[in-house]
Image (cartoon, rainbow, N blue to C red):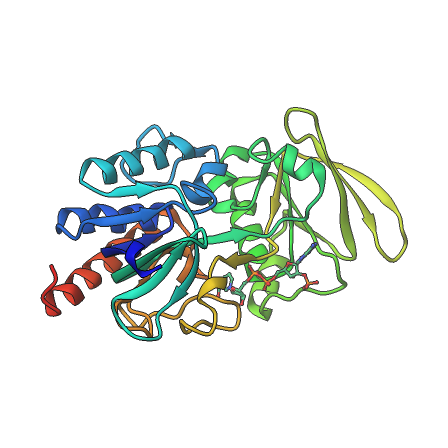
Length: 315
Ligand code: NDP
């Protein structure tokens, strides 16, 4: 087994804005980064349509195209981008850290940058998948603007749903909040904000049966789980805000995480509790979750890794 071990100076796990930005900085610092793309090459932006809030694109850009540009830039500067999943890690003995690709290929990496992102949770109904990107979205800040002056709904009752409902209320004509229980989970302050917003209508005990529309969202069919009353609400946008899952399962019990699995980084750095292992992007950010903030922390991770390698006499 050991004769096949590949030695890498800087291994980057994940291919969203955080991973590619880390790669761009690492490549320019001559750290010879190798980036594994993971299960969803390009990350969450590849399932969105127009991106209008990433600075530098005055006319907006399609999510997949933007991620293709990130990749091209990383490759042009010398990143070795590979298709594959990191399936196991062993950070117990210090650097070089052991990592396995697709359970087979073994790597020893002097530094590791985790940029595995997070995945939005979905309701799991057929119409939600079919209309994803055609009116169904898991990011109001990204896509709310496309529903200016229109009616939309948002599912969820946590801080994200409440925050996104108030965000949408400023852009849209009317926002329905679809809440499955008879109360919200969101903080009292957020609940008050929702209650005090005239164009948000909260529907408690309400569950989604189907999102209506063939090519794009035209409405939603819901039912009240107490009275069983069904109704159809015409609308153009359907937002899902029922939480995210950080893609950090393989680091459990190895890297310090919060109770939801978000990696904990040391304040003002991308350093984790394991020396030589850095984290950036949505895998360590439960609050902002934007492409531009992910890219920013990707830059931090590469700079921290460069300093770490230099101090060890590697780069
Ligand atoms: P949460 O896990 O807090 O809330 C998820 C919500 O989605 C819950 O209300 C839950 O309902 C609902 N839900 C889950 N599954 C379904 C389903 N299948 N159908 C309908 N509803 C469903 O996630 P958030 O993303 O809101 O927040 C994550 C964390 O981030 C929290 O700790 C939050 O406080 C924090 N946060 C903080 C912010 C801030 O401080 N500004 C902003 C945003 C998030 P139920 O209540 O019935 O379980």
